[in-house]
Image (tube, rainbow, N blue to C red; front, side, top):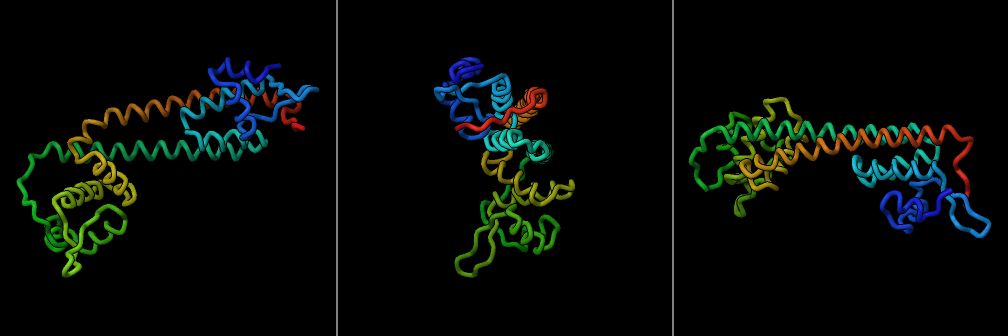
Length: 240
């Protein structure tokens, strides 16, 4: 049997954190001594190890959902949550691939001098050899954010908008979906352009790699916990 402080020391936590995890349902309910003190077992130790590993790979929200489902005996629900998290990681990898491909093209090309004057939709559509309706569709998808002429209400595309449209055009021709392109463009805007974004891509890929490796560790820890749970007759004991 373990006291809260025993589990806390084992995992570098406070005793209160262990109590909170049990209260929140990410640990199975603890047995109680005749005097009301919590008594944890190896099941709880492995559950805590699994939860902390899950956080590193899946984040707090998904990890809590996974552990609470496991503790209810709903393994399929837990596995579905894991599947969703892996799908999000794959989507992030695809987004990164798209950013790298587009930035490589933009940064390899010699910058063309262009006016700082905004252009109307007809000019931009002609420049990209697309229909104005295509640019409107991209705007609805969140890819473009043109300003409006205060007098006429017509769309006006700034040089940054033109850059975004060129990048979107490249990605669209590469087969990327509109929502995917919108995500790429948000990252370009947040970085302040293609050049600054290119400098951060290696760090971004490194973080995705770390996340994937953390998911592998979490899977092993969760498997250990499930083995411990299924080895025992029952681990869900109600607290008074």
